[in-house]
Length: 301
Image 1 (cartoon, one colour):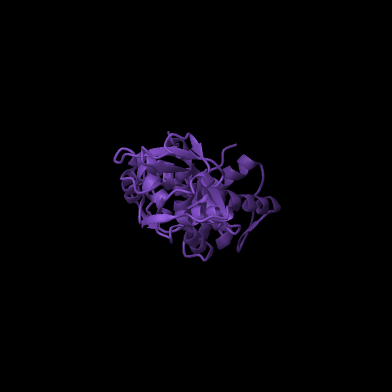
Image 2: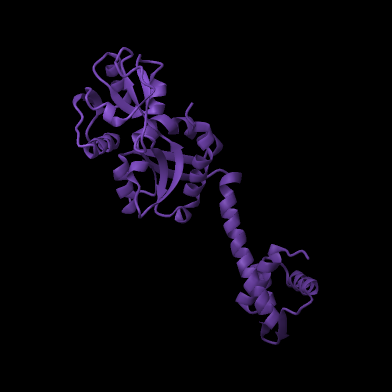
């Protein structure tokens, strides 16, 4: 059995208008062509869809059942076409992604060029913010999609794992900690630190962990970004904690030693988050699927 979507829509037009003549006009075909298509459809199904009378046509019981299924099929076809459009035509849309500094500097520059080349009609606006601010923005409806640290998950939001984003210690090459393979946070607290500004979510999460140990970090200097921290550490001012990917990138420019950190707090992840991924616009869903699919390409060395 082979059904034509045009015939399904033709039947619905006839039902809506109450006559073959008006249904044919709405479908932009002649009355003769309309009658022939309905007859062929009825022969294919071995049923009568309509009863004819002087004032028009009326659905039979079989016709009523046919219409119910035709409506479902056409609706599903429309949904499928909308879902496939991004893959066949490229999205013509604007996407705003809220992301923390680690995501913006270490991950997205590797991925976004490919997406933008494959989707030339898409514009992406990156809005850098702290993870806790991103959570609040999505909860309040200000933002739709975000990339946050796993430190800041919300019970009101859905999350998808985007990438591992572990933290490491960096220290001058001659520092006494430089020869260690792994360290716990408690091993570091007697040493002078170089850190990010206090408002930074990474800084907040590190200081939360030290408070749980009943300690406080001694900061000699606070700086606005990882590159500045790496330069100061390489010059012997102190030690610092930063994302492993940032350390790997900066090691080509500054001389410091990198040491792994243990504990769940240090082995954090980056998470995509939204109120409900299924409720996002098609463009956002397509972009989300792309980001998740790239996980294997952004694994740490």
